[in-house]
Length: 469
Ligand SMILES: *Cc1c(COP(=O)(O)O)cnc(C)c1O
Image (tube, rainbow, N blue to C red; front, side, top):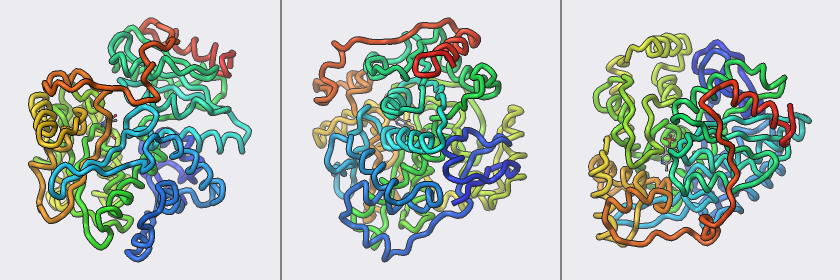
């Protein structure tokens, strides 16, 4: 499988190189040159497979030529073996034909484990083969950091540095990062905000001289392997609800458009999906595009669903690329306009075509809490605020009651106690068994000034299993 850039100017890469690449050299994002397409018979034959075997069948075409089948199978078995629920991604019924796909049974209790557990193992496998080491530098406002650290903690060939804003992540989220020890794991608390952290990561990609030749790898959702891993659970859910003979709809709480883009790909690979609902919080750039054909940056709002607090949706470029007939030059122009500070609309026919599949809703904090309370009263299920936004959007935007509606349950409520408290459901939140002693564990973290040079000096001092690069 070959991968091409959305902006048409960077060289095509194979899977192995895409795994190790961040942005393409032309500033674009990598996508498969040709998407595999499965027949209905083929998809139907996968019913009842264990999750890791389904994962093998869905993802195999993407890694062909880079990872032999037997090795890939072994990696997948290990990856999904660390999940705490035997179904990996169980479906729980809320109402008639309305379901939550629980994606929070991985080590860090959010859906990001599905991709980052795999990414860590794939990186280590490829690096071992090449005899190379890499450094990962990532910024997090919460979920990504812990999932990336958990995914990389056993990697022999990866040193990981995760930057979070000092005193500005929740205690559960901080402890999920700082209580994992390893000579290759480095938590850095920056005396600044999340944007400061993210800027430092960007600047480090732009000028990598402080790394003395060691390669820098991206773990945010622009990494193709993350999207790829998320395609699998759309197939998994649909197969349990009568697919592919029957079509299914999904409502996806989204910020960077990574998770829902995976659903769009599943459909293009042959899975009958009737409707995809983009569910945002008050940071609603995606909703404004889907409802009014305007893609315009606005100010950032802090919400009760912080993992979706974004101004710009980094993966949306991948959908725009398809929307424009995969014309890289057109995309480069569009993204250039956007970078200059201008918003844009797409041609009416392109937008109308997109809207055949996508609907959207923006849900504010008050509605989020109302939904948590409502679902708890109706079913006894306690939702996290991100999932609640998905439920609200599903109920408002649903086109057909006859088609099963699956809401992606992106996090466990224990990660977001503030929203649950505000919803007033009065149910004590309990950490799952593997985390019950989280608040007693020792923490390891370095606090650094909001200063790029200081951070880069720290990385070059510790980037080779704790030793200088
Ligand atoms: C990251 C995250 C999201 C948003 O996912 P995208 O791929 O950026 O759309 C939603 N919910 C939770 C809990 C998350 O951690």
